[in-house]
Length: 556
Image (cartoon, rainbow, N blue to C red; front, top):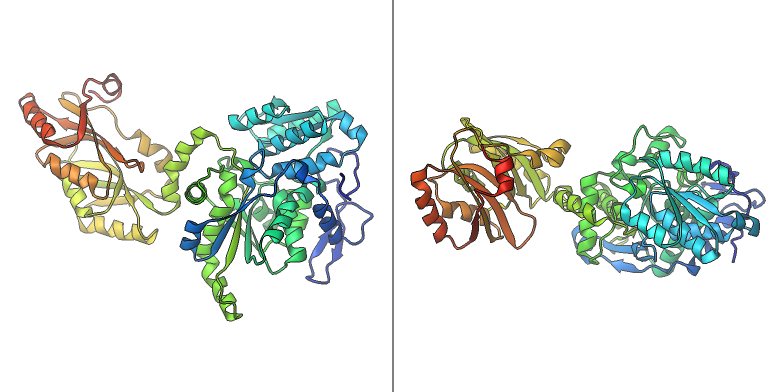
């Protein structure tokens, strides 16, 4: 089955498609015609989307209620589950639609694509189903899970370059040498039409939609959905969501044309695109109602949100729409709710977030969990100066009352002051951070708020430590105790105030048990006294003083 968009030999210039702006009487939007010959403009796109043969490989993805997020945002939130596609991403829609449009001569030449992973899987699967040879050039930084998935689908993989741009430059040369058909990941009419079937399904699945949140990398999904939604349901708000460090659509809108970003962040690798597609931009510039950008911590928090509702783990790009929805709700949700109320609509808003992919490397989850609480504004990180004297830890914890401490890092440096790195759980978000700073000042402590300090979050928290001063006799004890609010304060109360603590490392990871590594300055005649105190504790402990790793890095 073929789309009504005329098949033709692909050149290597992504801007090759002919773009004609025709007036749209209904809304005054420019209509972009991908190929000459169809003067109806917008109807060509609708026909292409409606007849795209994507269901040869794709499934009609579910629309899943997000009950927890709905309660928090005050709107009915639904997830469009493109993470459940056979290749765990929406990308197979556009890739298959493109390959299915090729004529016999083009299929015989084979295809080549450059991709960081999801488009590659779509092309490989489409090639396997249609009997077309597929070669995929991927950056060497591509997550292993995506590389192995492409290989398993039968695609021939070439790893080259540290970035998408480097891989693309090499892929273009290779495509010319081997005379293959270039399959662009987003700046192509057939690819855009294939991705537009997501919007077609949404209209069929939902009788009322107030806003749709769509992630943007190169803009293929957003463009396809925008054309369909704004043609049939112009009242639906289309909100584009981008990583703050890869906001190529926002940058293009600011400059009035696709413009390369000076640099691109890599955490949201599925959207790490330097320049939005030219055809995509022409389709989006008058159809997108707002562009929202989010940072890494917000994306990590959104990954956690998705896990907590449908119990699924999505990749960073897959959670981008959810992060943008939360940002939008915080910034403008109240305003739009008031506008709808003024027009007589009493029902709550219904918002859709497109979960675009689930190709997450397992080892990235450690970083996600580390950053999710800060991104959700549920944790604040401070550097606090306290007196270097016995009982100072306990006094500090007492000043915090029943607040939950999420992290506590300290190493003795034989000074009058002790510098501690402390994390605290927040109940009321960012406003509570100022209250905590005031609380520290009232208690006589000097503090700095490091919650937004990237170096502190990435490095300082893991570098705290160092060797004990020369001549210090130290015992190192590792403890485990049931984790609950106030558990750390109970632990310190049980130890008492008579000890000079030389090292303290604690991190609440949300597990059932809290874990502390604690150092004590201990003359020989106090060994027995400490052992008696430890024996009275109800918690498990291990003496780690002779642990070879601790002796190597922490001992005098």
